[in-house]
Length: 318
Figure 1 (cartoon, rainbow, N blue to C red):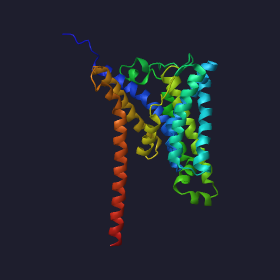
Figure 2 (figure 1 turned 90 degrees about the vertical axis):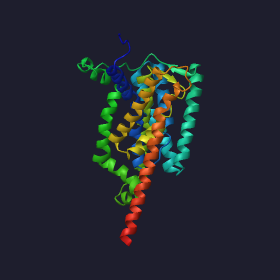
Figure 3 (figure 1 turned 180 degrees about the horizontal axis):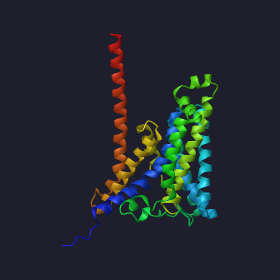
Figure 4 (figure 1 turned 60 degrees about the horizontal axis):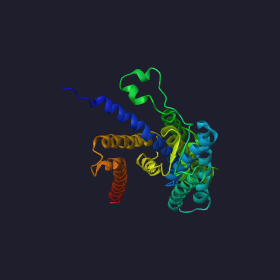
């Protein structure tokens, strides 16, 4: 009796391939979010930044016919959004949570409006996008080639940026000053550095990374297509990855990979379960449920740590 279904290794390699693709926009946004976290800013507005980056990248690529210029447009607009966010949170001392939520709402409304106003439809479709790359030699290796080859350039760029960001945060003076701006701003000011300036820099860089994440969604993942709400709460997932990883670039990427794995697993299960069953589409909720569990774990772990420290201090006093 012949089994016409895919083999275990085929399904496994396909799932891991999807994991890398799904993790990329979350990881890119998390690399920016960890900078604002180190600087003492809670940036809950990354979802809006990603969405606007995706729209600008697709719009510029459709108007000019260049995917590279689309990415540059998303980066430049990310800088503008980062400046906007810093203006309210750093300069005007507004509540970070409220500004972040307002930014997410504004992005959802603006991108939907301009997509309809300029293109007459709910989305944008551009012929300029980044094709998938087949890595020589690697693509011919069984299983490994199916996992690591055939991705957009953004996936491979993310691996490089994780290393660069780790070196930047922990091995450069600017990275040290950004961390000091959040941990001990008065000490940083005593050393002759302006904490507010470091917060501005962190916010701008966060906008750049979120712009890249959005550009990946529209130009690297969906072949030049923008759809309303396509960020799909990835900014919130990125924020959860930042918290879970204690703002460490390498750990943030691993957290993004965990989200990507469960997102890919949900997609695979959705293809297996009959679509007429009432719970078939619940499989797509798996990565978000895992994210909630992850955040609960972080909160519980932090609470237990504070309790242990309090008990230790009480014991020392006794």
